[in-house]
Image 1 (cartoon, rainbow, N blue to C red):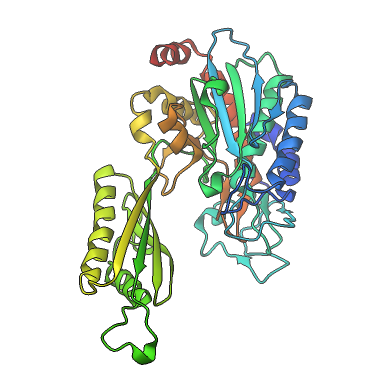
Image 2: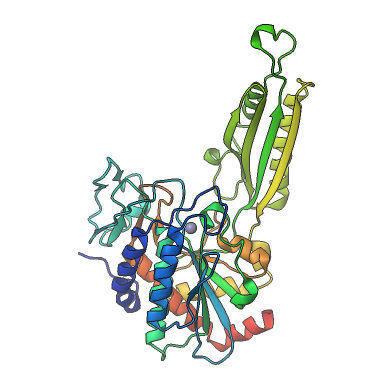
Length: 430
Ligand SMILES: [Zn+2]
């Protein structure tokens, strides 16, 4: 028997939401790591144009796509209190799994067994995916097995469009002025780069870019990237006695000297940070180690950076004729430090999730969101669940039931922000 929706509202929103989602995921919006312009790939503009058309059709007459690939639109408020709240999702998909030719499959009334994906040997086995095991009776969307699905973050995009279309069609439902933005290139860390906070004009915003139902996030990693470059002394190996200093060997020694039983992505969880060497390349002449360093705590983050630096210098001390250069790039910051002064922003998300009949779960994200950088730039932006799972892989799946709950949560959130308590706190917090 098909599972119930979390509310009548969610059930009402589901068909429209699913139609939009199926349309969006078919458009190839995979971001490219090497970016020479915004957006990094033209497919993101194709989706942007579709979204502008749909938002205008829904009654958001000012919907537009700017030259950098950002979609913005406004749904004027009914509450008349001047509060402006933002809703944000990203249009691009991850470069880490194939993103061309996505053919979504809807598995109606999921029976709790393994789901076989036709275009590859991939099986979604509830034995190893406890979140899936909990979705018996849901309608589940997967890819055909040879691509990612793109629920990250087209689930969020579809939820926002479905929710604002519903609000626009029901002016009797209370809402603040809602500002919508769909961003490009979030997956390559550039979603916030050209985001114009002043023009957006919102008091705060919410990204719809999370995962399991009822979860929301006001805490993310703080992130640095480190590039360790080594120059060796390259000599013909037949005449190298006492002369050759291999940069490739030194780089390998540095990586080998780093902890491997702790401080790595695969040995940490929860609030533990890590040093992740994601690229190692080199020749005898030159070598490069690229690592991302992550932690929730700024002091511990600095310790991890210092550990990699110290390790590199120790190894290099054995090879005085080789040279070392270490660059550290700041990527994004834990949003918590920017959200703590305005606690009512995350509390409004909590209140909306509660209003949808769910028990809200606050989870720190082991990564960053557009909101990490937007919060740092001055727009407090926590993150709300979307109902999608196993992102960045061909196993990616989403529950239509949970996506509908997310869309309904947006409608509830609009109402929360019209309640005198919230709009007053919003005005005072500005
Ligand atoms: Zn995402």
